[in-house]
Image (cartoon, rainbow, N blue to C red; front, side, top):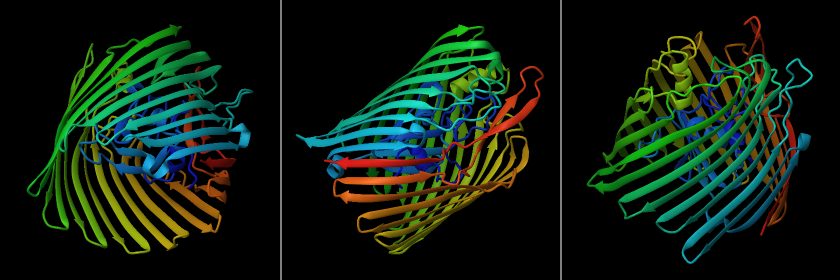
Length: 562
C-alpha cells in the first residue's frame, strides 16, 4: 500500500473508518456538531500497551494519523478483542506492532515530498546486542493541506507540523518503550460558531513511557505513564463555544494531563481451561490554566478506573473452543462528579478446521462518558446515564491455497446511548462485511471488501443506511511494483457516491534503494465530512461546510536501507 500514516490504512476499514472533527483531529465518530472529542471508545495500542491522551481522549486523537514507518503490521478488532487487553470498554480496538530487529535490523532513511509543500523525513534504526533488542525511529512531518473556503478572505486551515519519536529496548522477558510526539496544528473551525475564526491553533506535546515484565511463565506486570500538554489559542469576533457552553471572544488555555496505568495478570492452562485473570488501575489527572473573556469551571479534575477481569478459554475438542469473559470497572471521580460501575460480559464459540473458521460472540458492554464530555454535559445539566450495549456477532470464513472468503455480521443495540446529541439513545445497529482475497501468484493479488450498515434511531434520523467498499490490486514485475485501490462510500442521507482512488508505482533500483510515485484521492471525490455552522447573531443554521479528511495529493518518496 505504501502507507505512510495510520490514516492511509484506517480509511480502508469497514463501518468505523477514518474521519476528522471540526478541530482537525482524527475522530471517526464525529458528527460535525459543536461537541467534544467523540472517539474515546476507539482504543489504540502499540506493542500491546494502550496509548491514551488523558482528558483529550483516546490515543486516536493524536495517533490516528501518525507516521507508521516504525510499524510492522496493524490489526483492527471490532469491540473489545479480549478482556485482558483493555482497561476501558471499546467499539473498535487498533493494534500497532513495531518492527522486529530480527527481521528489520539496520537503518532506513525515508524522504517524501508532495503537493503544496507536504514533506516527511523518517529515520529508523534497529539492532540486537548482548541479548537486548533496540529500535529507534525519528520522523518529522510538515503537512501542508488543502485550505477550506468558508466565505471569507481567510479560508480555514488544518495544516500541522509533527515531530515523532518511537523507541524500545527489550530482552526475553522485559520491554521498555519511550514515545514522544510534538504536534503544532491549525485547528480548522475550532470553537467558532460560524467557522470564521480570527485565530484557531492548538499545540500538543505528548510523552508515553511503559515498562512490562514477565516474572514467570504465568505472571506479567505493566506500568505506564503518559503526559500531555495542550496549548490552545482561539479567537473570534463573536463568542466562542465548546459543547454548547459560551467561552467569550478569546480563549487561551494551557492544560496538562497526567495518566498513570498499572496492570498485573496471571495466565495458566489447567486441563482444558486456559485461564487469564488480573487487575488494572488507571488514574487521569488534569491541571488547567485558562485566560480570556470567560473560562469553563471544573467540577472534577481526577478520574480513577479500577478493573478486574477473568477469561476462560475452554477446549471442547481439537477444533472447538468455548470462551467466557467477565470484566468489572469501578470509576471514581473527585469533586461534584458521580462515580460509575460498569460490567462487561462476553460468551463466544470458535470452530476451526484446515479450511473453515466459524466464530460467534454474545456480549453485554457498558460505557461511561470520558472526562471532557462528562464535564460539558454536567455544565449543561444533561443526562449522565451509563450506556448499556447488547450484541451478537457471527463470522464465517473459508480459505484455500490462493483465496480467502469471509462474511461477518453484527447486530447491536444501545440503551441510554451517551454519544447521542439528539434522539433517545436507543440506537440499533446492523453490520455485514464481506471479504474476498485472491492471489494469482506471489506477485499479483486482489483484495475486495464490501459492507452494509443500517442504524435505526440514530441522532435525529429514524433510519440511516451506509454502503461502502474497498478494492485493491497489487502487482509486481521484476523491479517494478504497482498498487491501485479505490475506497467507495454511499449513504441514505443523500445517496451520493464518493470514490477515493489511490495509485502508486515503485521502482526498486537496488536491493537497498527504491523510488515511489503515489497519488491519493486522485479524482478529488473522496468521502467528505460535514461541519455545521450557526449564525452567532440569529442562532440560525448556516449552510454547512463539506470537508474531505483525505487530501488530493501527489507524492514522491525515496527510501534507502543500509
